[in-house]
Image (cartoon, rainbow, N blue to C red):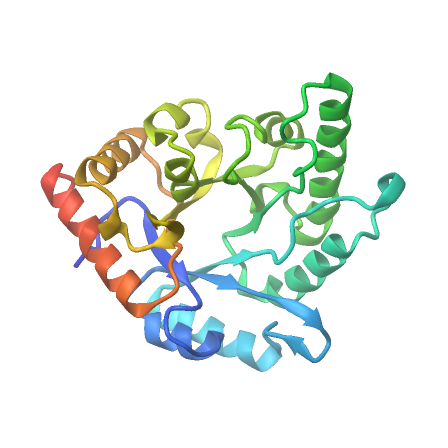
Length: 266
């Protein structure tokens, strides 16, 4: 297993065992240092937003086991028609943030909507998207209390620098998703310079046909190269194993431990 003296916090998702958030948190307490709460809200009757009692128990687990939490917002943030701030993604983000604020999350993970604009070469189209994305982040920052709590994630099939200007203009944090980089055949070693300093959360997962699989599906070199540059960078944030089963979690932890041993990181 992993040593306790790593400079970064190791976490995973709230869907490792087939159960709700609290049973997962109880299961993971003592195994990880951070839990990414994966929340959904279809309507008032279909959601997994924690109520006050559940938040209280999550805080008790955090105090007892040295846990922290990160929260993944349910929808890609965007403004509505004509720049309206009443878009459903912002409404849901507000409800999630308000439901979890008492957990003092280290970060809220954000996807930015840009499917139509991502391949555009029209500078006016890109500038308009950037302005709207910055405004969306600023709106959400009113609910978190600090824009640095919003960590914008790089997505698969997007230009590698797509979010760079928005993160810089808004002053938000960054979430580097290593699995998405691998999926697009991008080397994290080349992605880190100029970006790792903005980063508070890293998502790590393997690729086998699709992403969010165990790290055992990645080559030893890919994993070793990642940890070598990570340790060299002085990163002290969260690494979230973004997988969704016990087997993928356990085998990924072992793959991480094996890699750190190979490179002399532990």
